[in-house]
Image (cartoon, rainbow, N blue to C red; front, side, top):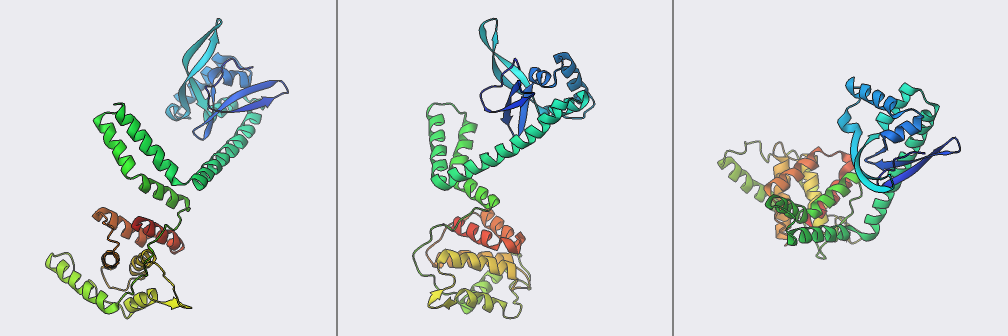
Length: 327
């Protein structure tokens, strides 16, 4: 039996030969064993295992910094409980030693470890997903608020640390939206209960002409800016105004504004300036509808670029992201 016990963490038990059992630490998407545990696993002296590990790192077969971690571990020594910092080695290092020793038990351990890791990661993801689904992001926001308040009140952070906490707290919803976007789980937010106003092609053209004059005067546009390609602009705006069976196809201000930004940028109705014009019409429409959500210049640019570079299959996800940012 191993003489070193891993610190309290997620632990799995590896069993072999009907009598051997080893407590294995699960962390950072890998399994971890101490030097003594590796020696017990392969039935070799610690000095033999240590020599193999030294050769592995000396020849740069593996990088020590990514395969070794130190953990405080409580051991029993002479009847006393002693806390010591002990090195643990991840699965890559363990298997490299196993190949050199040519141990049958090493092969068994590799098969077992890969199976356990797969199950561990899947279960961990499922638990996190279920927790977010059942409790919602409000729990995360509450935890962030509590952490920030507690650390600040107790004077446990420096001025720099306090600034970081303020950023985390202020933009907590942004981190949540980005996580949901990456995982494809972003949902449509609650929307305003007002009926969206129709989009007027003639008013849009007047606004675009005023924008063009302003940009030309500043040297930020050319004569190609806002030059229409056929009747695409009319098609976009009239399409957003459509209804079916007495119900609007784009039923809310947020939904219509998000599609306005998306279609102008993705359909390229102008010879030049589609991203700028799409962004301009987007914020102008929101302002006229009383949803003047002030975005920073950087935020609006990032949103326009994200929309422009997105794949067609990502359309619904992009629309939900824009609507969440409006909300």
